[in-house]
Amino acid sequence: MKQFQEFALHEFQSIEDAPFRAEQYSRLKFGCDEAARKMGYEVADAFFEQNASALLDSRCLMLSSPYNFVPNAATIMTMHLLNRLNSHIVDAKGNHVEYATVPRKISYVNDYGLLSREHRKSLIAADRFYFNAQHFEGRCLLFVDDVKITGTHENRLVELMHEQQLKNKTFFLYFARYTGDRPDIESEINFAAVKSIRDLNRIIAEPNHHMTARQIKYILAADPGELYHEFLRFRSAKYLKSLYFNCLHEGYYKIQKYETNIGVIRDAIDHQEAARQLVV
Image (cartoon, rainbow, N blue to C red; front, side, top):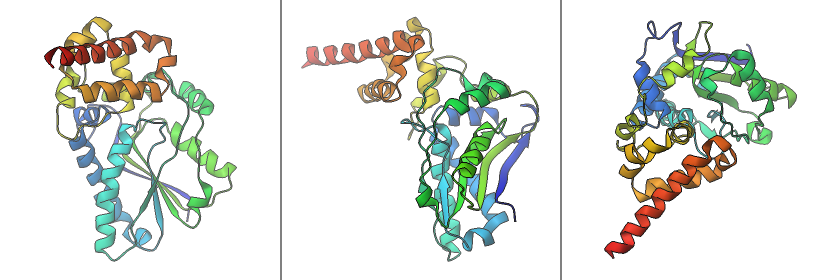
């Protein structure tokens, strides 16, 4: 049996022939919990149906797509996938899947979805992923991501496993796998539901909304004039402070392109606090 196997719920060559709604996928990328739950459950159901015997006979460890501080959309989907998969496994008298993360250390301004295969490979090669090899011992690994476009992340993870001489049985799980030859299609599906900063208002107002790295980058790249009037002034103090501190934790304050909007966010916080003091 091969060490590395892939499982993808869907395959597509274009947005037009995709067997899923691009708008739903886009909402996932910007923190919609309902989209993450639906997609995660669908992957879990299909994966368990096809691989129940392997899952029930193994000690499994699930790992979401690598991130630094702010979880990416794939991580949100992964948590729902884990919930559903463990429900199936425990109902079948198996041993629950445990969870782990793969930290990464580079924050970059590039819109990954617009990059060519070569640029993606170069960018990932400069990134730093970390494995806890001792935690992997004796386990079947389940790496989860939302979509596979060029396979750059998967290839890098395989390289790291070879470098550390890890022989674990490994599955790469995806909601969808792209089979065409136009990597920038990823950008199209990423932004299918978000065409302007105003579109974020509806997603963020939903229950159980999650802040994601893509959401933060989109906010930081928005027109500064529109950012406050069309978005920030509608946000709670809790959201604004979380947004600001996450910009610091991810190191985005070091990126010149983002400096202006980080200042706009800080001003919005100060404006709210000043208004609150006047009321008191």
